[in-house]
Length: 180
Figure (spheres, one colour):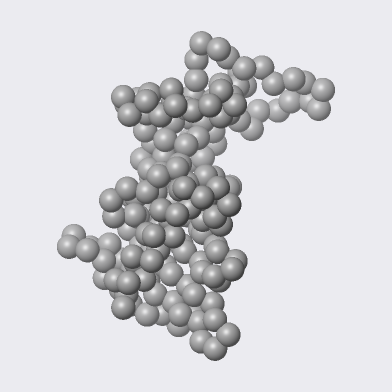
């Protein structure tokens, strides 16, 4: 049964990649800044292999610096209609220079590219009347890959909730049921 749950999770994530309105398209990403947790919403861009989750960001962003100092990361998804919560935890790798990343960059729309070409870094202070300046000769596009080590599945129901923790092992995933 637990393998079926893993398969259904992967199917939902794959659907989110191709369906703009799917609730799993956007997820909450958590990092550690010193001793303080920081969270933000990011867009799921790919899922590879054994639940490697991928999103894009500006390499000057605070989350990239936080991940360079502590690669521990979490990803929280929630599907309100199906009442399913997924919590992925693992380690992040920041990818800044690869041919594949350059290929992705060339396929982005001009509108999407603007997110990674601002003259000032994300989170920089501006006044309400300041315009945002963009660079035409440079970008700060990068990819964050989450290598999942644990995955927690929670299905909320009217009768009895179901909660399963999956832990990655060399030969697959071990699972155990948890009290919801």
